[in-house]
Length: 347
Ligand code: MRU
Image (cartoon, rainbow, N blue to C red):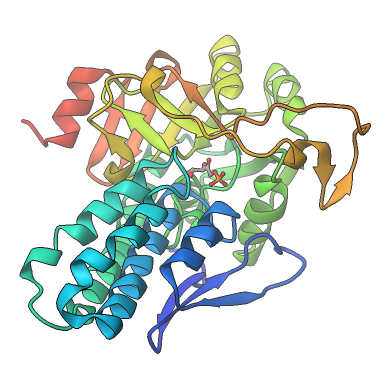
């Protein structure tokens, strides 16, 4: 099985280390964090991004918050930490993994009697490790759905960099590549942050998996030319009925896939499923700064007077999704009943 041999989220000597994804692929710079508020800012500013990676990072942020609060007011740390928890929760709104991880961390508070670090650090590491293991499972399950000589198209970066390691959509592609099922990997460049061009291309090439980039607008023509068999993407939040929020541009790929008879797969761990929301209309879609559209790599590309609209995600309705692949199993043609069956492991 292919391994991605970089670890972009690291805990060492009571500090959190994050590979700065804004600088990839040109520079590999690691930043050090000792405060939860700095971690929240790093999430907001895209030092680390991708739904599961955001959750894991926030979990380590809770360890930093608790350690600092315990150092200052040992008796009162559970109250003092509340501001940091709120700041972390508000870092980005769409990826449910953030709140999911914070809730898991908070659930451990009641059993802590003295120094919070041992229990909280163990929980953060468990969240991290479980995510990697889930990705390997999804990789194998998703790869089984693909035919031989498969040509796939992915969007954004749903790889090792977006998770604890291995990746969701890229995990499926890694597993399928390892069993010689992949003939060609296409990746959308994914404006405005260029996660496809910068991150997906970088990490696939780290594993010697050839990748062909295309401008987002070229995907329709690629499909019309019958050059792709499956679209494989990740997700930031899947609602109870199977609607899928993911990087802006995912919805158009799903519509195009249906139009051209191409299969559409979403690979995501169950920590991305939000059973509290009935449908995608209820998902809060993050809108980011207009500057991200008006500039490229810090350089202004539009006239000064131009305005920009910059939704970071869109919602693909469940009926356009052929398969949601999770670590607990696959839901084909997702709907409420099938998602409930998987989520609660009903027989
Ligand atoms: O804005 P980003 O880069 O955090 O968006 C990331 C995505 O949309 C990913 O596809 C999603 O989080 C799934 S990651 C396994």
